[in-house]
Length: 175
Image 1 (cartoon, rainbow, N blue to C red):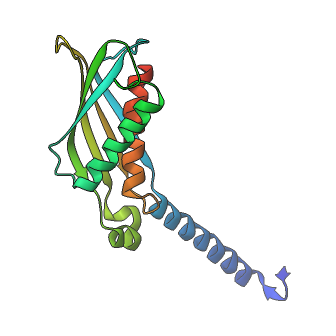
Image 2: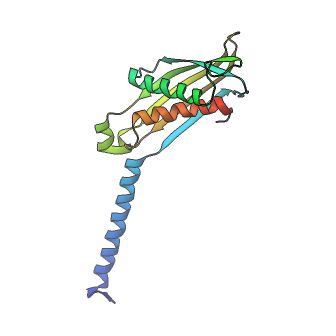
Image 3: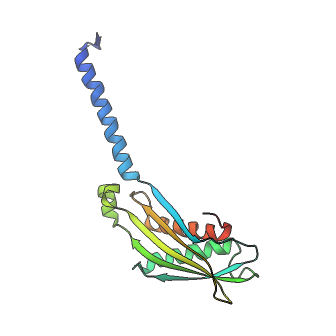
C-alpha cells in the first residue's frame, strides 16, 4: 500500500517522526510550564470567628529581599482590608498574625527562560502564628509553602498567591 506515491515503509517512518516530534513538543511544554504547588501544614487549627480582626508582623529569617517582603506585606494588608479584617476596619477582638519568612529562593529571569523547570524552583516558605493581642496566647500555628518551577510566573505573582493562601485560611479556617 502506498501513500501519495511513497512506499509503506517511508510512510511508517514519517508517522513515527511526527509522533516523536509531538512527544518532544509536549515535553518542552511541561518543562517550561511547570506547576504551582501551594500547601498549608496546620499544626494548631484556626477557627475564623466573626468580629475578629488582625494586625500583622512580617519577619524575615529567609533572607528575602526588601522588594519581596514589600510585595508580601502589601498583599496581606490589601486582602485583610478587603475582607474587613484589619484593626482599622474591624471592631472585634484583635489578633496578631506573625508571618515569618523561613525560606526564600527565586531564580534569576535568565535562568528560568533558559532551562525552564529543569533549572530549579522558585520557593517561599512561611511560618504563621496567630495570637490573641491582649493575652498573647497562641491561637494557631501553621506553615505555608509555595513552589513554582516554570518561567511563566513572576516572583511578584508567586508572592501574591502565597499571601492570598495565608489570608484565605485566616478568613475561612479552611486550607
